[in-house]
Each structure stands twice: as structure tokens, then as C-alpha cells.
Length: 542
Image (tube, rainbow, N blue to C red; front, top):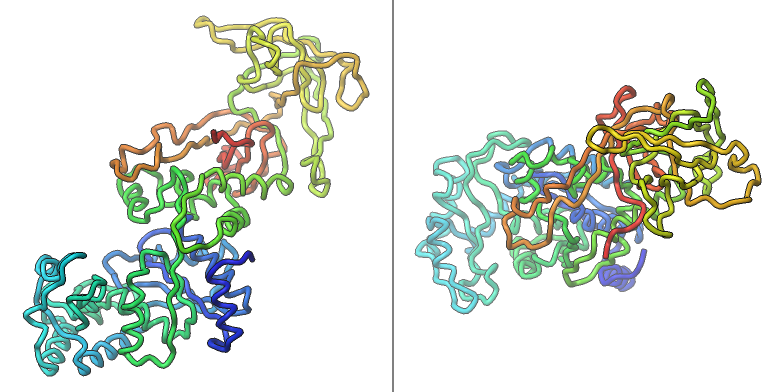
């Protein structure tokens, strides 16, 4: 693992004896699926701990039951395991609710917390601004006895949502807004997936999180840069609650990717509005969506590690992620013939009932993958993009009228005639082949105008091809989310694949020659093959 500032801190802490073991945690809120931005936190937490033979916990921040659901818990666990990581423990914030409550009582008894009756708008007014101090709540000087009584009544469900809060008593004139008597408990009469209806109050993340880290023995609590100003509050709670173990928080910059939504809230909005087909939609940057589209865990891991870890937010081109996949798949997947936009070809001088089977390696760069046989016969399909009626210039290296090309691993063919429909569209081309030019025969008297792929029509299997463009037209977050959606983000084509793909498995990946990397979709069946294009063979980035 390459060096970064967190790795250096961990190494120094171990060498100086400040810690005996590296313990990290990944604390997602189970309110949506994980996306590629979360992958940085997951991979860095696990990789750093693994590097130092430490351990990493998965801890669900389930302190806001109104947003959470068991389906998201299950999806998060599945995604993390798919990435190749096994948490030391799977824990929940709700595991600590009793301890959180006892520590809140402790803060009240120490005169460091009070029950406040201000509503959210009033609290905002009292809070002040970045340039002006806040004002003390009129309830700030309630007695310890009264606060204990009111807090117990909050717990018992006596008050309505928002009627009261428990706030830390710190400093309303602090230059750090997070220290201006932050709320540490709010009333929520909401059923919790783990604790049922036991609780009517739930701790805020800023209070629960450092306590949980301390109880779990976390040594290095890694979070995104937006929590930089929260660190002093994190330390305050650890100190004032007199935690035996003292964890430390370290912030790293967020990773943004061009034309990619990196907001869980926005992704959830797209799902709820029906703009996509769920969280595992192949256009979504969720880990589930990327997996379904055909991305590998190795490509994602290599991409994340290649971006490093720093104290500043960064934006990288989506092309980096695509290149990571190309590099990962190039040598390890089978290559196959697929015609996405078919044009019928008839070889007029080839025997009508003859099918010739040609031995072809799955991947010339990886002999270990073996070989298969592809069919050649009188009736074929080529891609329409590989034919033009009149050759435009010397750079055109494909088929045209009166032009000769090689069909990959087979013969030279020459187009002699074009058949069009009543609207003038080309529907079939008639060609002749030269039986002396079979690939591997040593024939080299003349050079063809290119080398194109094909499938034999009578043995080919029908297939659907899902072709994707970025879901978003641009990265301008100031524009309305739905206005930024790309109307051409999903195109379905109907074509053919060679017969060898008849028994493809769900999720199996291929390089379709001259077309791109594809994966067999979850909905694919033997009688209805469906393939998702993960990335094209070459970058279109300019």
C-alpha cells in the first residue's frame, strides 16, 4: 500500500507505543446503498488496518430510525463482502443506546447538559452566525434535578417530537459553531428496526459516534473532511464522559468523480422518483450498480488506491475508473464475437448447407483460457458500422462496395452487391469469398482493407445489449438534479453473439471484440441473453 498521511500517523503511533494495535471502523448509516464515494472509506479503513495487522469493525449508525431500513443493512454487508473485506465485528449504534443514555445522564449530573424547550427555528436564531456569537438558551440554567427529571420524561415518551432536546452545555460564543451547545438527544416516536419501541429519544451522531469509537477501542477514527470542525466536539465528549479508551479522529478529503452523483440523498431521490430502476441500476454509481454493470472489485480497489489519500477534496475523471477496469479485464476475460447492430451478409459462392468450424483462442494474450470453435457459413452478420456503400477515403479500413476485407480468423470477402428496402436502407449485402485466403494458411499475396468480426447467422444466438452513457450531463451541482439527467444514458440494441455464449453465467465478463467489455446481466436467460456494456475498449475522453 502506498504511503499517505494516515498511514504515516499509524506507523508513528505504533513505533512510539501510543497504540498497541490499529483498530479502525466503517460506520455507514443504513439509509441507502453504498456508492463509489463510500468505497474510499471502506477500502482505506480495511487496507490500513490490514497493513498493520490490525482490525476493522463495521458499525451501522442506526441512530435515526426514520431514515433506515433492514434492506439497506443487508445491502451494505453484501457490498463490503463483495469488495473482499470481512469485518472483525458487525455492530450497531443501537447496541450502545443504554450506555449512551447513562453517559448523557452523567453529563447532566456534571452540569454539562440540559434539557431545552427551544424549537429548531428558535435554536437557529439563538445560535448566532460565523461572525457573531450565539445567545444562551433561556433553559440553559435549569437545575440538575429538573434536567434529570425532564430527560427521564423524554425517555418515557411524555413529550412530542421536537418539543424538547437535550443539549450539551459548552460555549455559545465559541468561534466553532459545533461547540455552541449542540443537541445530543432528540425526541423521535419512531419504531426502530433493532430496538423496537423501547426508545422515544435517540442520540445525535456527534454524541454517539465518539462514545462508540471509545467503547470499541478504535484507535484511528477516519472520516471525511466535512467533520474537521467536529473533531473538537468529538474530543470534548470523549473527555467529559470520562471514557477509558481515547480514540482520535482524522479527516481525509472527499473523492469526486466527473459526471457522477456522489450524494446518497440524490441517488435516493432518483430511485424514489423512478428515474432509474433501483439502486442496482447499471447507470448508478452505487457499488451494487457498478457490480451489475460489470465492474470488478479489483478494478474499484485499484482505482481507489491509485487516487491516494490526502487532506484535501479532489476530483478525478471518470475515465480513471474506466481505465482501471480495462487494465483489470484485458488479460483475464474471454474475448468473443458479438454483432450489436446487425447487417445481413450472404456469401454467394459458399455452399448452402455447409458450416465450417474454426478453432479460435479465447484470449490470444492468455493461453490458459483455452479456445473454442466459431462457425463460418454462407449466411453471416456483421455490424452495420463496418460497412459503407462507397469507400470515403484511405482511412476507411472496413467493408464497402467492391472492397475486400478479412473476416476475423476466416476468409477474405468482397462486397459485390447491395440490397436495399423501399426506404433506401441497406438490409443485406452480397459477397464472395476466396477459399485460398483462410486465416493461417500463409496466404499473403494481397492485403485486405481491414479485419472485421462477424457471427454465423444460423448458429448465432439472439441477444440484447444495454449500452450506457453517463447518467448526468454535467457536474454542475447548482442545476436541478433532474434537469441534469442524460436522456440518452441507456440504449438497448438487439443483435447476435456467437453460439459459445449460449451458456453464459450471470455476471460473467467478456471482451466483445472491437466493441467493449460486457457483463451478463442479472435478468439474462438462456432463451433471452442480455449483456451490459461496462466500458468501451478505448477511452472517448477528450
